Length: 363
Image (cartoon, rainbow, N blue to C red):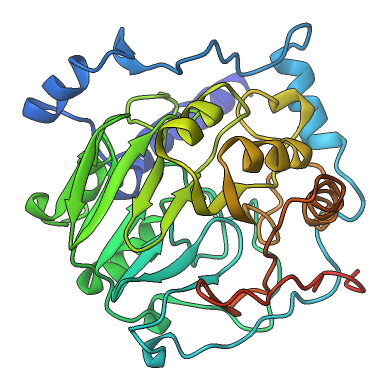
């Protein structure tokens, strides 16, 4: 019996090691890229660090307690019983002279700004992990795919987590993408996936680049990165997108002093697209609570706020619709203007009329 168990253990180790060699896990940085990383102020001991102290668990909570809570304390409505309503939009026929926004659920969305097509953190797979047996996407009335996307002038990748950078989606999309803007180090993954190095712009916090007539500035986020067991070998970022309108692309971030600093330096913003969902008090340093999203909207000096990071994957324990319910309530109390479109619904960035509580009545 012991011999059988040992053989099974060896096979498991070999199988895991073999699977981790797959291209989907990306690659390590080397050469000039690694030298750039090593010269970055927050890169120490082979990893990037947050500007503020950011423990993965709050004070007084052990890793075991956090894992127990994640697996055994899920809300009964963590996954909706009903199908999520979706507006089926022909993205390829949208007039290019219109500035607009379309959300695909979670943190994937499409922007048109000044005649350029921009796609942020596209994930069109049914799972948000490398193991296709967990974190399955909710059932949607219509599933947007890479085939639905038009030619993309700029893809933005905020960080390399699986729910923001999906290998299968990327491989299906890459022939449509002209250029990618991302955080320092993420290009190592993209190059392994055969995307041309010359068409990748990697930025460290505070760096600015002009791409296809638009200005991108990498700004601080309070989070982490990693596609395998090793964390923080690539940078996680938010971005300021500046054209005829000033837009903040928030990525994933816990609350911190950086938001007010960004607002003071780069604001005011016409729109702030902010993470709202997949939170937990045990992860309070790396994901915002809905009430903090409203506070951040004020600190960024945002005219309108668009909450994302919800309504697709059950990555946290809360009810699936809780993020939108709480952020809407907090916004009303504080007088913050938020935009909450259905998945696939076109939002004009020039003539705002969308603030529909579409989640009501969905079980």
